[in-house]
Length: 312
Image 1 (cartoon, rainbow, N blue to C red):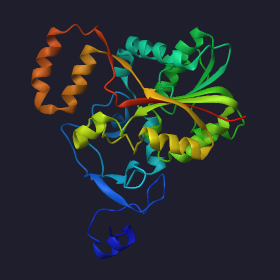
Image 2 (image 1 turned 90 degrees about the vertical axis):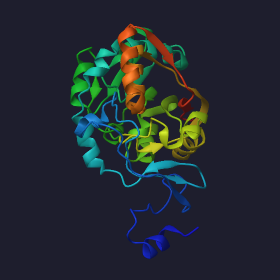
Image 3 (image 1 turned 45 degrees about the vertical axis):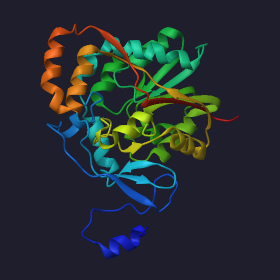
């Protein structure tokens, strides 16, 4: 295989090629998915909404032949991404509030007894997980970059930090538990963000992360049709690669399993229609006959939950 430096010299007309794998620094990279635009896509900050329907639209996605890591290249600058996330407004997330609470009550069981432990939810959005954690007996705070979402969470009575992880870690704060629900795939530099998260977890404390699983059977079978290939997903971890990164920055991985979202039938049908546009007209007819209030546990094995601890 031609190395990347040689390729750039021999074929300068090609799209930018990453110098090395983000995770293992190896040079055996392959373009896994070419850039594409599928259907009508959200623009500006709306492309980074938690409820974005911009499925299967993305820049080039590269994969490492050595470790299996996949990532966008090139990606937007960290400053541009920060601005986009600060500007996010996502009223559909609020419309799905009840099902978000169902999801978070379910995943809260993985954290064990609250016992008054302190908790930081990174990417707290509108504060629904903070609310569930407080009801269970945790002492939670949030970190949220979206001004709109952060204000929603503050309206529930929570302390919500509106700064990047690195800035918060520099203040010397520490928590018993740090959670990142569907967040790590959005970071421009997951390694540096998880290093900051390590500082925020007290020795003996734990971190819990959920993210899409590019190593899952569904993702491998669907290939380029996998709906979670999206503009806002910059890094695509499998269980092995996420564990590698967590261990590299200083955590000890203790558990990995699938993650279940609870969503409304209406939201599910809209998501499927956005992912597979030829079926959208039929799905729209189905939507009209299905009670929108129906809640559905959704788990196809391509979302994972990983837990790790900071050693004493």
